[in-house]
Length: 82
Image 1 (cartoon, rainbow, N blue to C red):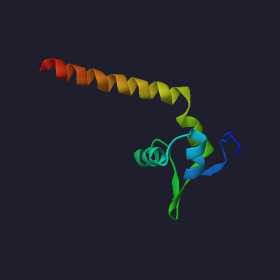
Image 2: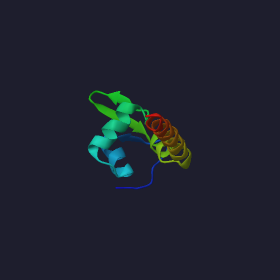
Image 3: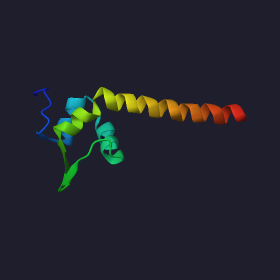
């Protein structure tokens, strides 16, 4: 398999899963949560390469880390009030 993700290429969810090196359940969760924009054709998803690239970009990772830290802070504050 070609490991270069081409921004304008269209990938199936299986191809995207292999490119991202994640399990089948993880790619389903990513699609269900809308972390990757995809179009459903029949019973299968089609994903643009630029969506896969966006997901693995440092900017998205940074946003995910910030969200995690904000949630963690809320949980810690809630626990500390007990």
